[in-house]
Length: 197
Ligand code: IMP
Ligand code: MG
Image 1 (cartoon, helix red, strand yellow):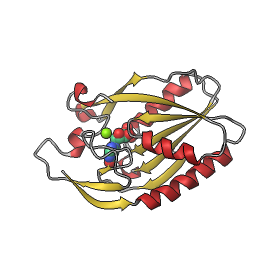
Image 2 (cartoon, rainbow, N blue to C red):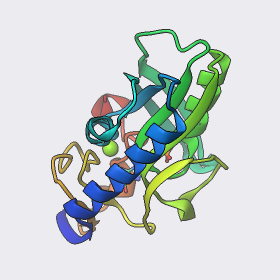
Image 3 (spheres, rainbow, N blue to C red):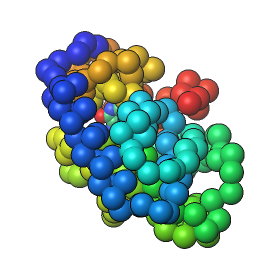
Image 4 (tube, helix red, strand yellow):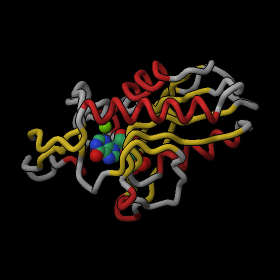
């Protein structure tokens, strides 16, 4: 696998993250929201976002793993690393690197509603709306991207490329069964043990 064209530069990410942080700071003044980062893909985005925010807030982390259920295209998702604090009656913003099928966000949304949060919104640096399998609302979106596999700024292919400071397309070309959509999603391991967050 190799890195293809750069889709979003470091400068473009930086200025969009500032805008999102400004918007969230304006929307959540006086509310002390909890920003929940989805590991691992959301951790760099969270780190940059909170440093641009101007209001009091808290952060927490959650890691999930999912298994794609054969041809049914349904997902079984489980929590592998839960939140450390109660979110009861709190204003929650889920922070994710990319929303693809929407299954992960739908699962998290249901789980958080069951924990009786006061309000719930989602913020993703990237959105692939053409890949949606379930309808989810993403309240704050950094950039829309086409249906290509992207890496960088927290997003990986087999744990590589998270450290790139830009978003790039990953060129296909690996051996059969090794393509990104076969193995790379945090939610789509060939075997669960391969893909522990
Ligand atoms: P979904 O919305 O439930 O399909 O899950 C989205 C997750 O799939 C993200 O949090 C990523 O871990 C992974 N993912 C989806 N598309 C990409 C991509 O283009 N590059 C890297 N990871 C991706
Ligand atoms: Mg991944």
